[in-house]
Every structure is written in C-alpha cells, then in structure tokens.
View 1 (cartoon, helix red, strand yellow):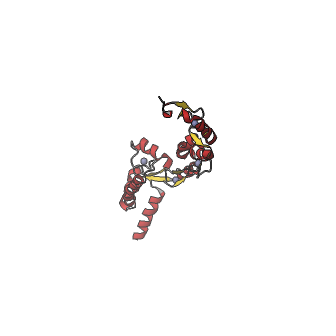
View 2 (tube, protein in one colour; view 1 turned 90 degrees about the vertical axis):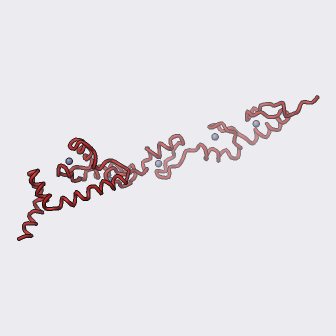
Length: 198
Ligand SMILES: [Zn+2]
Ligand SMILES: [Zn+2]
Ligand SMILES: [Zn+2]
Ligand SMILES: [Zn+2]
Ligand SMILES: [Zn+2]
C-alpha cells in the first residue's frame, strides 16, 4: 500500500503555500533563496525583481506637471485638486492656466466689466451672477462660471444681436428717455450724429 506523494502536503513557512511534503525541502530551499514577501502588498516577489515590483506597484509617482513625488493613494486627489500646476479654466474668460496662477488672474479678470442689457450699466464679471440673481431674478445670460465652452459660445451668440441693437440711434434715444441718464458714450454718439447731419 503506497500513499502518493502528491496527497500529503506541508505548508512552506516562507511563502505559506501548500507544497507536496516530498518536495518541501527542495521547495523551501529554492523559495527562501529566490522569493521574498513584499512588505507592502504581501505578494511573493522574485528577489531580483523586488525593486521593479516596488517601483511599478508602490513607489510614489512623479507628477510631470509640478515634479512633486506623490503617494499613490493621493494621486487622483493630487491630479484633480492639489497639483499647483494642474490646468484650470478661468471662470470669466475661459482661458486655461495653471492653478497656481488662477487666483491672481481671476482677480484681474473678474474686475473687467460687462454691459448689462437690462439695467444699461457696466457690471463687474465677478459680480455678474450675483447681479443677475439680485436684480433680474435669474442667472441666465450671465457669464456663468462654466468650463463648458459650448455654453460660453451660446452666451456670446446671444449677446451679439443685443450689441448690434445698442448701436442704433433709436436704441440710444430710448435708453436716454427711459433712464434719464445720458451716458458719456451715448451723448458722444448723439452729438456726432447731429454734427454729421448739418
Ligand atoms: Zn515557499
Ligand atoms: Zn508589493
Ligand atoms: Zn503635480
Ligand atoms: Zn480670465
Ligand atoms: Zn442688470
């Protein structure tokens, strides 16, 4: 009566695998010499590839934008929210620029003004949304903070006809009549027209 060598196994104390007992000594000698347990993920790694394994699976990543070393667990956070060199679009002019420069840029960019067709005055871009909500009960038509270039295109398209109307004589007279305030540029145009006719 013979017990097959395959049916009895022993656990290798190095790799914790079950090895046929008849092979265990040979296995252990080979295993302990050539494999090592990765201290981070617990996988058994060929000793000669230990560095490669660490570099490929666990080493911090080099951010190509800011050259910082970033732990893998923090990589998506770094790329999406933390990297000072990640590219962000300015909410006012939609120009893409590094996050580290955004604040300074938006301070200047948001100070630019835009003509409000409804109240006929210039409104700072940074106050445009608040202005529209406060005075016009909505934010439609405002330079909404948006990274959607399509939306911006649509808004620009909507503003174009309004701008054309504004330049008409009638519109200027109407504006003056309604608001009772002659804006410098309006009076200048009126003056010019009158002069031109004479
Ligand atoms: Zn082993
Ligand atoms: Zn590992
Ligand atoms: Zn970075
Ligand atoms: Zn801008
Ligand atoms: Zn307004």
